[in-house]
Length: 396
Image 1 (tube, one colour):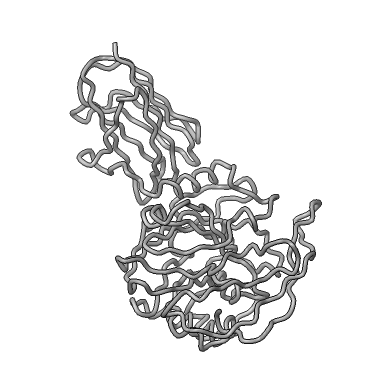
Image 2: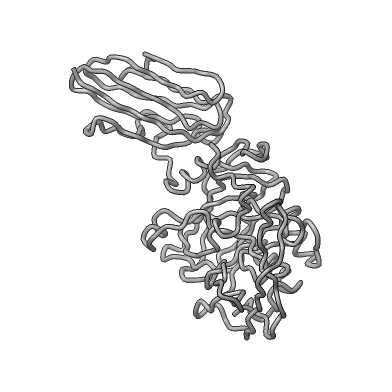
């Protein structure tokens, strides 16, 4: 357990009132007593609650603690910004942190200092929300587009293989401010992936996509989302304020289904579906130049691809070759912002183009001769959008 050595009393389970966005207390929960133990030798477990009723805790064991993989390379990909606050996200090495009472000002200050060192032994500042934008932008069902800045792409940091780290978010300020003034309260009080470090031990970090095996976790990473307002301060509990994907490290958090406010569930919106798609297929495999085009395979008659274009990736190319003439059907949908599609011949000349306004789906239906062709997808005005590309070919 992390750094608290006595029982911290009772905590009321928070439940949704069916007639509002407010919460009410029901079953009683008790914080586990724990002795601080070193985090550098083994994963000690950060189970924050034990239920005194028949309902199990929503918090999985070891939640919010991340273990670096064999490569020592950990990547963060900023997927979506749904928070009105402008803050910073950092990671900090957990070795030796057990000497501080978890959630205390000493714990907060040390975590911030480690993140600010920006080295492999201590930690890093990994995202600066005011200056950088997310990969996917747009409004959800309940909120306007809150993204600002340019998407900087996936960022990779070097850490010691096997080491463990926690994540901290300063929701309305900087990590530097947290290091110099660890008594921060209200809107800029730092929040943590480890629930026991948060005010009233609340769960601020949720897991958006839960893959089924460690091999998938290692290959595709895991997607997490922060609620950037303290849950005891009228948070809306939409858990989309800062969504990011981690690769090269393993860890768990409470599954979002267990904590999200059902009246603020954004996941069925167009934006929500794009975020989830990016969580499932993290890599945009379409090349940004013709020579790196993603090869289309028509062996099954039709093909489907997902990708993303925006200020950080202004062109996605796909290429295919036909050994006979036939009919091509192309559709581009699932857009959150305006995107256009062009069909090019082998010389790069435009044969057909679809440029509908807004998020209206694009389509090209034409008859082609045998030969090599390229598809070019571009954003309009560099606005970010994910997309679904559907292709089918019927030979004559």
